[in-house]
Amino acid sequence: MSIRSRAGDVFLGLMGFLFFVCLSVVLVLNLRCIYYFDIDYLDLEAVTGYSEELIRENYDTLIDYNLLIKGVDELEFPDFPMSDEAEIHFKEVKRIFAAMQILCVASGITVLILLCWKLPRREYGGLKLIFLLTFVVPIVLGVCAALNWESFFVRFHELFFQNDYWLFDPNTDPVILILPDTFFAHCAGAILLFLFSGGILTGIAYCLLRRKHCKQEDILLTDKT
Image (cartoon, rainbow, N blue to C red):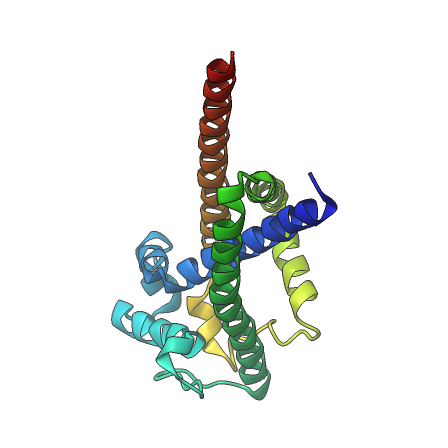
């Protein structure tokens, strides 16, 4: 295999991994049912003193703000005040989610083009790399999160944010009361599960294509003999 072909496999592998990461995040962002389940599971009505209707409405406002398709430029909670620090933090979060949504589409198109180029040439190395990355990374991150979720949660914020505005004061930003850490743990678990599933599906596709290729080679060898 040529250096150019190997480089193409590596690029495809990285783009495929990026696509599955972004897709997993975007899917979880849109799956409001995770939060709706947690309203009852975490008994947020009793814990916060707010009604389920109020909790849902304010959560939906936050999600709509982060979805590019909704076109919401300013965040205004129906029932909660918001400090300047919280507003800055939510803007930073929105930029991350916006980047994820854009990268999901861009990387998806890139992967599709590369697959259309490589699969007819029976070059499956990129698929193998996608499988390895999307299979191993969720396991490693999942173990780290399970061993110490609080430390994992803090390290995540320190990595993506250059300030401590994510440390909300319930007195000035009561919205944090309806966003418990356990909910974010459930979201992280769902993201890793989607990413892991993407790896499994890619691995199956790789194995099937390799098996088909081997059978075709065996047939050719048999015909020659």
